[in-house]
Image (cartoon, rainbow, N blue to C red; front, side):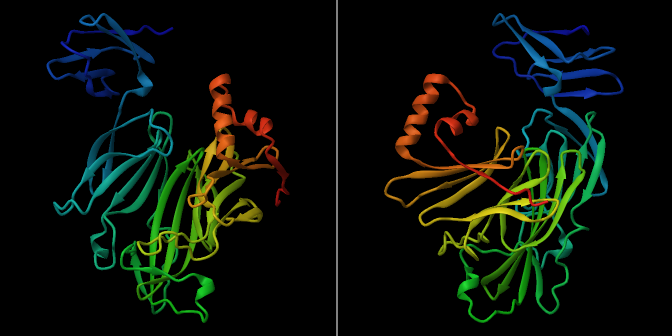
Length: 386
């Protein structure tokens, strides 16, 4: 076992260590408190070290892999320094560096940590200011290795689709919840011609994958009349898993751990103030085989239900629906087990939820597999779509 660093910190009140960073060359730790500056050097750094608070007779074990990691990168034509959190959860976001290009709070250049080893770079494109309706634009994703060195880079801006719009106007992030309306496909009658296309870029880390989405809204005046989305899917090392083009109305998705399936919500969600549940088409959810691009199973929302979201839960892909306007509230839960190609689903009445909570309090069992069996979920084995 490597020797531990024993740090003796004498400080009135609770320990408040911050601005801690590793200097890889000097093999040192610098630690600043509000009253002390202490420097410690060592030939090696163990995975943990002890902090002894004599004032309160407490000993704390601090894991080295939870301490901030100091990085330096070239961004916007200069070297910038920032610290990242190696213990951040996948999908959580933390701004680790920021600047204001015009001393204006409305516009930002940022580096955002979206996973322990993934950084997102965003900047304000001044050259597009006349057609740009957002504070910043994602331009690059950096995937890091275990030593926090660059593993792979994805140039978000250069690979963006939907750049040919013919005679229509091309904009970015043009959406006004108060000034726009939505005209669903089945209400349009004759096909309306768009006079503007607006591109939205999204990045989300869910489970074991990152989804880069490019959503294009088609507008006729101030009315949203169409939508399509292209997706680029990566594992957490930055390897491309799948590319899917022109999904009609993709709203949100999650990828199975082995990268073979995507569970996603469709409908073209475009809620506005006057149309809070506006959809371009009938909403629902689907499972897609990412190798064949085939839809292996799908369902529409039933009357009274509203899809709450898709999630990665205990090895399952999950879609959850609620009934916000029903007299007797119930949930509709669906789990997909990729290993057996099996869907488990059930409508949950409120009294059944109460029973489940009582069962949980009694047994302390948190495993959904247990409750799927106990509460007799409907079981559907699907074709693989290969």
